[in-house]
Amino acid sequence: MRFLGWGGSDQPGEAVNSIVAGGVIAIVRLPSPDVLVPAAEAIREGGVTAIEVTPTTPGAVQALGPARVKLGRGVVLGVGTVLTADAARDAIRAGAAAVGVGDEIVSKDLLAQREFSEITRRARAFAEAVQRARGQVERPAQPVRPIEGPDTR
Image (cartoon, rainbow, N blue to C red):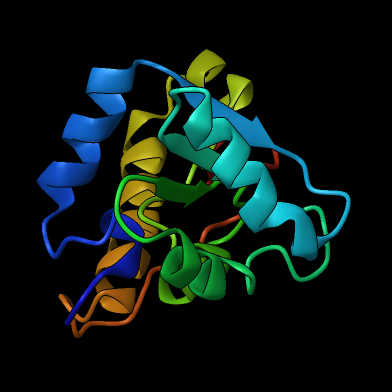
């Protein structure tokens, strides 16, 4: 399987090296999906090769695949503000190298309540969704429970 989101390579290490070498990730909130390629080209021309697209614009995630093909090697595209494991899977399948997840894994409430086992469970659910999208895992994802006070398991 070829991961187009890896900057044109089959190896995730190339994307990581690119991000670390550049030291900057541009966060892009698109007004419309059709500006992804010209925006990414301008960002790359400015020396930044890691771009996180927010999924707040309808069609932004679906624009990743065509953008990845047009941009070729040298730009690592990711998706941020991912709220569910299914959305993570969809972003990876659309061509994202990685996804950014915040409170859906580590929330202030879970930290305050010291619910580290729940943080582990949530992290695992997202990691497995990404691995399944890449064809690396066969088992079903664990659902992510909403944050509602203390863990009642």
